[in-house]
Length: 395
Image (cartoon, rainbow, N blue to C red; front, side, top):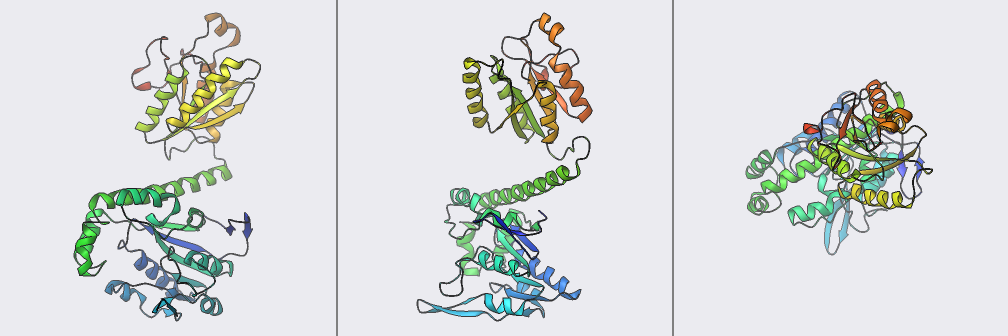
């Protein structure tokens, strides 16, 4: 997640220069995101960094107010809308002040009409970053565009304020502020999140235990996915030898041969049990694939989607070598292939595919599983690693 610039999503161009961007993310209000933002700003201020508060929303919480300490606050802009006065961040004032770091609360906030050039606060933040001002901000998981609809279904609450995922994913640092469901509910009961008159409705609504558990899981998965992507980018850049077992990734090699669907389903179950990613690889061989094979492969592609796998196609004169090469490139930890339908004569004259897979995979530190297809014998208990004498036709 270390980026040197912010990407302009509409033009798909990189805008330089860009300030550094840090986001605290949490499962729900009250986990401590604003406190963490203010604490980080104070630590930088103590080290001599020019830090200002562009906007902070304390919600009247004493602990949050305490964390402001003597940090400089850029005066808010007061905007009249429908007969009421609303305080908003004064974007122009922050830009004129041009600090090294600006603290900007509630990234998903919708600005009051007429308060500035943008509808959303995250757009204001991008202006600050483009001006070379570092920004520290925060957001709740339910406001991310990719999960907002799911949160509405889980909680029954309408999620009106949303942030595009690409804004959050372009942060240089994304830090999870975690809290258990029980701890959050205790904070609510003590009046540390909402005013006491709103506590009963909150505890029986959005802050039900099952809702908070689901939101926490969504936040944990989002941050874990970002960490995994960052690691893969590092690995691609440094190209260390072998596979890093940061998480399980399964690659199942498929052809149009009968029974391959059984192998694919078995691989999917293995991946699900291990909570790992499933890649489905077909090594193309135009000279030996007819129309019948095409229909079978189309069916396998549909099955791969149904079981949550990602379909990959590759070309190569050496199927075994291609399977292992793709597996190594994708940081796969386990390869799954199907048992052979080839005759002993084919094995003698054309060589054993699975033995080549085993040899090449061993050099990369990748486990290999050979799965018996229907009518071809029984699979090893638990789909264990292949022995030296087993053969494969999935490659």
